[in-house]
Each structure stands twice: as structure tokens, then as C-alpha cells.
Length: 605
Picture 1 (tube, rainbow, N blue to C red):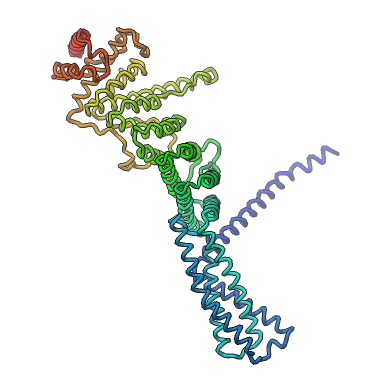
Picture 2 (picture 1 turned 180 degrees about the vertical axis):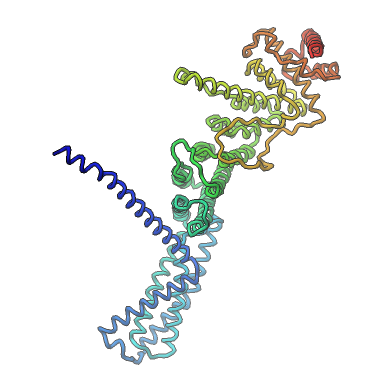
């Protein structure tokens, strides 16, 4: 019997699950429709015509209510002679309304201007604007009806009841409006309300994005456009309030609001925003990405401005906290090249706002960059190297090149990785090393071009010490005037690429007329350092024989002014910081070796 029961009940389970799924989809559809209607209704109420229509509807409901009451109180239909007290009361109420309306508008305007001084982008809540519009409409109607009753001197009791109900409604709206006005000039209330509006705006936009297919222009896309506009304004207002608090040294309030904002940003920069899986490899329509990107750029640019303001005022602890939010919380949480590009641009702006000699400001910044994925922010590093080379700052150059050329240590997991994956990983690693050397070679070349010999000497010592001779040899053999301004890119899994703007083209801009001269000088100096390092048994990385030296004969084989080059190198002498240049005997031997290598290379070719 038990077996039969199971056999009979088994086919019903899929059917039950199917019904539950259909019911769930139906419920979700109804919920989405209600959400859309609610937002549409809120936006409609911002229009004066809509407010007037709804106010008229409320007025008609009041009239209907009074007429319904008058059925049970027949005396309300009779015409009464207005007494002197009624005249006085009516006159007093009318006079008060005549005074309250302009005064209230003045108070509201004053509070609005004050809030704009704190946060120029502040737009307030939709509820506040609805209350203002309804107060204006009800006050005018109440004032007008009061004037009519007062001028006639005779009125039905039910008309007076309608008027008094309008007065009560106007007083209620007045109280709410004054409450909002005073909150607008209270920084604590203003900041709390603005962050709540920012949170609501982002959550509403997230909900609309999940409903919209990203293609069709419909009710949802129209709401997204309006909601995006408000979200931009609320985000900017929030950061403007934080800036105001910082300027006025409202430290505890600043910290509290920054934490609240952090919670809101977690909702935005999250895989759940687009309902992605854990890998992040889910296609997102370009239209949705474009909307998200615009909002993302607004958040990033404002966060960068906040960090710069804090560091410039030497508020290092608060600045590092804001920096942590930028580098950890706002780092793109899913793989999309467009968003990573936006992020790199803002990091570029951030690093460009500090002087290189402000080491106490740059230290936490470099520390934060060091925790990030190097391949994603390579242009930021290149920009810092360019600035260091152009300014001749050897100290900063020393700090940055070690971070730029760092390698992640994966030896602990090597035994757990399949051999094929190890081979692929090694190939990728070699390419990254070649890219790092390529960058250092460009920095050396630019240093020589600018005559910043100390930078060139340091970079040459770093290159020979940090990298294997065989890798330097391979990179220099592929280095040329053509690819010197090219950033080698090995990133993959990019959903979308965009053309770089001028501000994104971060390169060294070599002088084509002096390129060969600087290139030949660089090759001689690198080769000389490699030979000197091996001869003196200096701590270099795996130069076991002359076969791992760069092919100097091939590199400078076409040079027709080798003697002049050596004279210029020797003349600089100790300014390079390279010991071998100061030793005359070694330089003579180096010159002979290079001439012999050039001759041999010509014979072999």
C-alpha cells in the first residue's frame, strides 16, 4: 500500500512545483506593477497641474462629506444672518491667511537658500514638494472662500463648515511645511534626510533596472531616467554636506554620516545590483551599463574630491578612511572594462592632486594601491613613474617601482594546481614581466632624454638587480621607437572596450629626433651595469654568464657616433650613481668589448 501511495503521489510533485512557480511569477509581476504605479504617482504629484487636480478632488470630497452630514442635520440648509462675532471671526481668519501665505513662502525660500549654500545640488524630497504645492493651492482656495463669505455677510451653515475644514487642512499643511523648512537649515536633519533619499534613490533604481529589459523604451525606462536624475542630485548633495561638515570641523557628525553613506554604497557597488552570479561573467545590456556607469562616475569623482580635501587639510585618519572606501568598497565588483576604465581615470585624478614630495600623503595612497590588482591600474602606476621621472625625484621613483614590479607569490599553492594550468600561468607571468621591463626601459629612456641622470642610473641598477638577464635581453631586443609609446596589455575577459580619451592616454611622448641617441646610451649603460655586476659579484638576479647579457652589438650596431657617446657618458661621471662609469680602466675595457660585439654582429649578419 505504501508503494502504491508513493507511485500515485510522485507525478503530482512536478505539477505542484510548476503551479508554485507560476504563482510566484504572477505575484512578482503584480508587485512590479504596483511599484511602477507608485513611482509614477509620486512623480506626477510634483507637477502643479496634478496637485491642483488632486486638491480639487479633496475639496469635492469635503463638500460631499458636509452634504452627507447635512442630511442628518437639516438646520445646516437654512440661511443664517451672520452675527458680529461671525463677521469678526471670518475677518480675523481671512486676515491671518492673507498674512501667513507670503510669510510662509518667505520662510520656505529662506530655508531653501540656506540648504543650497550647504549643498548646492540639494533637491529635497518629493513629499516635501507635494506638501508645498498643496499648501499653496489650499491656502489660496481658503483665502478666496473666506473673502466671499465675508463680503456677502450671509452664508449657509454648511458653507461655513466647508470653509472651516479647509482652514484646518491649510493649518496642517502649514505646520508640515514649517517643519520641513526648519529641518532644511538643521545640518543634522538635512544630512540624515539626504542620505535616506540617496539610499531610496539607489534602491528604487536597482529595482527598476531589474524590471527593465534594457532594450525597449517604455514606462520603466522613463522612470529610470527620472530616478537616475534624482539619484545623481542626492549623491552630490550627500558629498557636499560631508564637505561642509569637514570645513566646519563637525568631526563626530562627519564620521557618522560617512558610515551611513558607506552602507548605501555597498548596495550600489554590489553584484546583486545586476543579479550576477559569483563569477561575474554575466552579460549586461549596454544601456544598463551606461546608466550604471554614469552614476558610478558621479560617486567616484565625489569620493576622490572628498579624499583630496581631507588630505589637503592634513586630516590623515579621516582621509585614509575615505581612501579605504574608494579602494575597497568602490572597486568594481564585477568584470567590465568600462567600469574599470572609469575607476582608473578617477585614481589618475586622485594621484595627480598630490605633490610627489608630500610623502606623508602619498604613503597611505601607495599602500592602498599596493593592495589592488596591478594589471587593472597599470596606467595609474605609469602616470606616477612619468611624474617622478619628469620631476627628477629619485626618492619617489624608488618607492613606486618596487610596487609596480611586484609579483604575487603563488608557490604555496603550486602543488595543488594541475601541470597544464601551471604552464599557462607561467606564460602569463612571463608576459607580465616583459611588460614591467618594457615600462622601466621607457622610464630610463625618458630620464636620459630629460637629462635626469640620477633617475636613469637608479632605474638601470634597479632593472639589472630586479629582473633576470634573459628577460631584460628579450625585452630590449623587442624595444623600438614604434612600441615605445605602446602600453602592453594582457588583460582578458573584457565585456566592452571604449576608445581612450586624451586624459586616458598616459604615455612618455618621446622626442623622435633624439630617440636613437638616448636608446644607444641606455643600451651601453645597461650592458655596462650587467658586466660590472657579474665581475664584482653584486647581488643581481640570475646573471650566470655573458649569454644572458643584452645583445649590445645588435642594439647599437647602427650607431655612427659611438666614441661621442662614451665621451658624454664619461663626462656625466658619478651623476648617474653607477660606479663603473667612474672607473676609467673598466670603461676602456667596456668600450673594446662593445666594439668587438658590434663587429661580430656585423660579420654574423
